[in-house]
Length: 508
Image 1 (cartoon, helix red, strand yellow):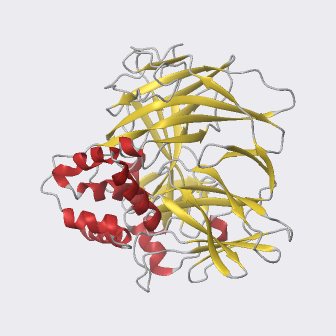
Image 2 (cartoon, one colour):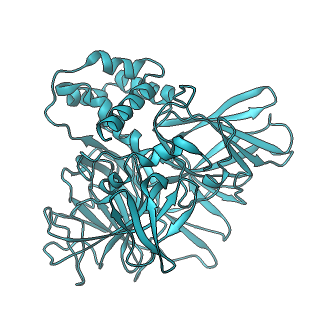
């Protein structure tokens, strides 16, 4: 992103050393080199972490030679193509780390395997004083790729109360059929209790060249000829195209602070080619909740002090739940409006749903483009500061329609307590498998269906659930401040920016 000067430097200079708190997660999930592996509640496992690269504020993707980079005061030092380099923290937008866990023993059989690995992007925007796992949320989903478990999903983000429980569809990009079996690992790596009501595989076999993407409601859509934007500009006309054309290590996530004009709302205009006679387009987005935004959800509820859990429990009331949904739509925190430019001006054509913040998901959104003149399609997004991390966008005018799939229940789902919870996860009946502690986990085993000849395969994990935030003993509630954030337009972004400014001041 060609954000020159202080805006981009401030975004990264807010102490990149804090990013390691985001992924140095003592989750307790680990496996062993024996045939069976385990995930005890309080393990003494070996965690191996490497800084494997950085993305600079100029959009350069730089990979490090082995053994990776190291933090030295206010810079990351590493070798790149055998040459020693030093990267000041102020020049770094994202740091890329690989975490890998191995075991020293085995107690409870869960899944076969040798390692758990993930490559994770972290920003400079993280809290040094929080627990290492506090910047993540929701269960982490790992797929067995034949040699290790690889992080592939982070479902039902934002579902912070049972009344907000929802379904999700995580594409398992790394999963492989090994001896006729699929293996999935679900772990708790955050300071929260995670409740899962359903976990099943959807296996879609489809023609080569067709990309299968889920929409917000779980319909699997077959798309082809997905085209990236030919241009993307921010609100002052800067070219940010390189940040949004592909799923790569360039992630557009501006600093959660006011612009020079005091605005707390960013803007992106994406331009795509369009056939003159097109009537429908599918927007394929890869987006997630921003790092700071994920922290602010808990911070906002914390305004209620000792009444925080009571308020979350009250969301079983449909009227209260409706007020949360209205807030998310009005403030565009969990739902980001997608505007389409027509001959008469901008019209809202739909909305993107936030997830993550660690794992971004592809989602397909249908757009009516019958009133879009000419041979170009312009789309506008106006995210509030701090709440969105955007990786890529594409447009398809070629839909094969809904894609059929095979639904698979787990044959077994052994937990870190040695209990098989496969029946609890087989259907959505309000009987939850709960993971109350960091290190809780379940290994799911599925029988892979035979492949159809000359067809490609895409696999999704369909889940339903919610997660319960853990609060320290709270003080007096600030009901007035909470009501303002929930009910006054623009107050959420103001609260977010003020919290960020206070954090920066405290960490100078």
